[in-house]
Length: 253
Image 1 (cartoon, one colour):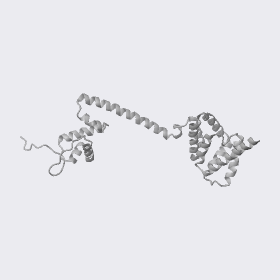
Image 2 (spheres, one colour; image 1 turned 30 degrees about the vertical axis):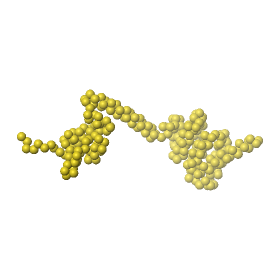
Image 3 (cartoon, rainbow, N blue to C red; image 1 turned 45 degrees about the vertical axis):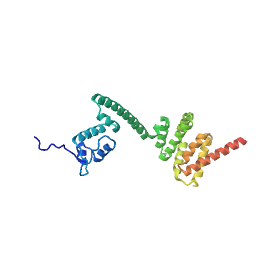
Image 4 (cartoon, helix red, strand yellow; image 1 turned 120 degrees about the horizontal axis):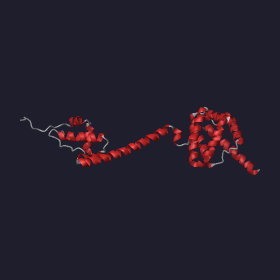
């Protein structure tokens, strides 16, 4: 016959260690009502029974399996058939979350590819071609943003714009001007070298029958490009002014 029939008791630290959780977790389970909080003994300490350790292990196991804490209490007191049905439901819910996270990962992977997430392949090819020609990434990003704006503001213009841009990159003179503009990015707006560049760009627009101020959407796109550089801002402002002056002269004539 045993000499001591007293029930085994555990301190909160021993309880936590037995269940493989932290003391903080035990207190949290008390707070949310999953684990009953025992009365303090005469010395002021809480003492836990072996049943509390079993309950805590079950709580930890369900939580580690992804069961929401809000559903654990019902599972702890469920009959076997109810438990099985609840686990099936929870598994389906977890699968939905997995599918959603998989979709998020796919979108993140698309973001890593940059332009291809929001622009058609033909435009991405143009941007990559600009890079291969030696155009700086700063200028390419401004170009990318201009395509994004055009696609949002005037999607019907995209096919013709793609054809125009592809033809531009096939032209050595146009490529030279692209690279010249790229080199001017950090010039001061009153740098005298800009005067010659503006003249060259204006002559190019006249030869190609381009109009710097012809569409509201293109004005917004131009403003996005000019934001990247004070020199570019001066170039676009000057070209727009010259185009407007030509239109006025033609109208009077």
